[in-house]
Length: 239
Image 1: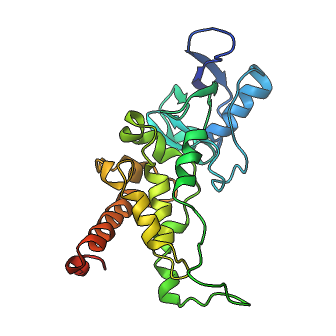
Image 2: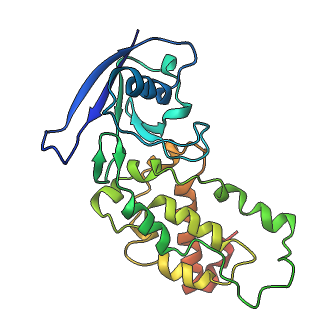
């Protein structure tokens, strides 16, 4: 048997937060997400959690599992110590059980204007981009906005207005896009008090990213670009 200890909390019923224990069949290859579905369908229909694709693409099943922020759909029960302890993402209001309110997360993301802003009138057919220009986006473009980095970030815990590693990683993705014309505007946004210079370089976001991206490195690159904007003689730093 596999043993789960799952965080339970419903703000609407006035009960205090608690952990509830479950036992379920130890099926070879079962993921934590499949275990939660077993609990929901066979043991306790009141359990609430969020998921969608079940293939580590959508990012909606990010949770705190055995001390680490990760995706429930890609986490094998057989590789975890038991009981498997499942908590919701931190720093965000709890709607119910493992479901959190991501409003602040998305507001911070929206603040960096996560879309292309043309510098001039768009071409009739398409923007041309060289392989070298496109390759600069590779380290940033695969973010699935799962919020694991946000939940692990101690600065986000202390200041919800801090843009967060997810938004800052995406900001660099557009700053380095040759088709975008809002580089200076975005650098001004992330240079504010709630931006890159609030980062304490703890590396939590880098460790928990399910896509093996490097938000900490992206934040460092943005810091350099901001400094070069103010002091052009430092442009040798911006490679």
